[in-house]
Image (cartoon, rainbow, N blue to C red; front, side):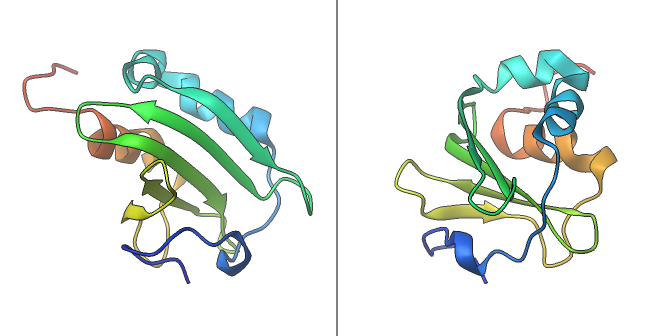
Length: 117
């Protein structure tokens, strides 16, 4: 299990394959939030099919990487790490639903109360 304070371990992440193009469509559904994160340097792990998507962000609250996995419950496990892959924030044990993904990332990476929706 990947916990806060540990380095991310791809082998211990219980995840399944997913379509990165669909994930990008979800993330870009609110393009202003996606851009506000300073998203760049996209990486896909395809060792056993697509099992992980990682990108670098430079937001107000978090600067580093965002790792996204799809778990066996069809929920997303998201990890925010520093540039040395040490986990700073993660979703809870169950994961998050697809309709919460962008807002969860935005809350942890960029959002401040002064922003208007």
